[in-house]
Image (cartoon, rainbow, N blue to C red; front, side, top):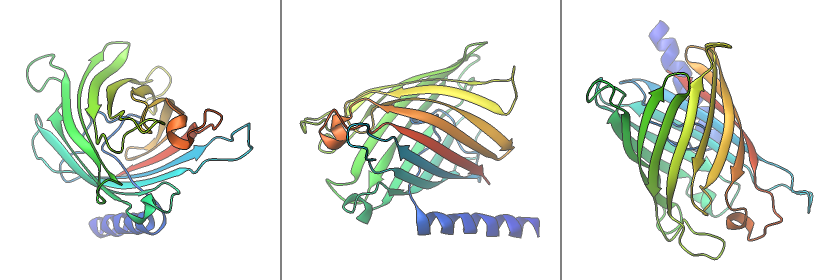
Length: 255
């Protein structure tokens, strides 16, 4: 009976996702991908909302981003892990939102898997859209991460995507950049509190600096609250006066 209830709950959340919102991404920090993986046969449901801040010049708001995704662990090994995901993304745009399905995949090793003290590695891709030259951002990346005592986990990497879609305000390609993050479980305060800052380079719409924290309400439910500062406002509206920075809330549920 317990397993039946879990299945029913999972299906219910999926239906809510598909009928109302949006996409998801691989296991992430706040904005960028991470070296974390879903465990084998486990599922992760992410419901993410990005609320644009008010633009002081025109007293208007840009479109928010609504994100819903389902990610599953697919390898039964401890030293080699992988996950795949399917996403439904809504960006408040009638053109892009007619092709809302995206896919992601990631494979890697946890810390200490290759040898004692070895860092974690992750390789993968996301935003594999279904419409050529419109949603096929095809972002590939590589990450390395190491947990340093007291400081926390430091991650660094690089990404590369579709040069026709990842562009700046002048429509010039800006399809690559660094990935950086620092995250830490704040056990001095509470085992339920996690804090992070991450950065994705590039003058495209993916480039951003994000600062936030997470609170775990139970062993499988947590919420991230963050402030998102985008590298290039012009990449959105071709105007430096438009404020597209956002406040995000990300609900994460593991099954």
